[in-house]
Amino acid sequence: MTGKFIFALYVCLALTEYSIGRGIFRRACVEGDVVHDECGRRCQCENGNLVNCCRIRKEFTSMTHEERVRYINTVLKASNDSAFKTEYEDLLLRHKKVFHKGIHSRGKVFLPWHLWYILQYEDLLRRVDCMVTVPYWDWSAVAADPWSSSMWNTGNDGFGGDGDPNANYCVKTGPFRDPVWSYPLMGYKRACLQRIFRLKAEDSTEEQPGLIVAGTEAVDDLMMIQASSISNFEETLRVNLHGIVHDAINGTMCCENAAYAPEFFLHHGFIDKLWWDWQSKGDEYMYHEFFNDQTEQMIDTDYNPREFLNLNKVPGDAGVVCAAYEEKIAMNFVI
Image (cartoon, rainbow, N blue to C red; front, side, top):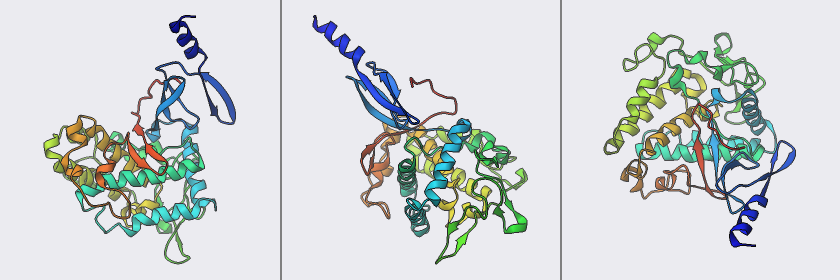
């Protein structure tokens, strides 16, 4: 046999075994193909092996009904199952403990710290179900009426709706409704999830007239900021776009208990995606000295901000982790 024939035969016979649901399938791993592994990571096929595997984070309202239910059920299990509950609540408590210690007021910490924090949350959820990643919610697409979004469906594929003004604004609909779901306070006390939606567009800021949260035009303007004005980019994203959504949802999302609100991570997922989109314009955006020159560890972590600049290559408990954001229009990968 010739060398070329043997190599071709090897490629044709190279198989990658992975699972879908409870069944085990064997699929040809064709050189150069993009496939998904048993945990849904997007990988490249190289010499019969899956390499460069990357977690894919999707926009929540673009996910299928099954994907949405799977994510919400995973959060419910992590927050209620005794095998995960303590770790889940301890992780969310960490955000509360450092809430007033610079993670929101120090511009050089806010974005990398929350990138790290989303990853910790995602790692925990993936121990419950390795097919799950933390999705994001693109609120800019529904800025004039964000409460009409299917994000707030009251069935098993949404986060429930507004709080009940006759019940201390506790959420009474959806999977996280009171008294079915709660989060811990001091001691043995627990609290309901609260929301007080900003219901009128006229309540919005002068910068965004007619909109409840920042819209697509504001996002487009953000993306136009040059790397040389990174401090302007960071402050606009942190204060104007990030802060106004917390304020608009209000309730639990608008206090030091914010991380206990399940929607917290979808909101911060979109903030992280906007940062990633901007970074992807070039190395001068991704590795700017604004972050890269930091020498102090981020509070309550073992890491420096510069270690959390490239989402495709961040440190994790089991080695380097790659994550990537999928646009709202589904991407065509081989599965």
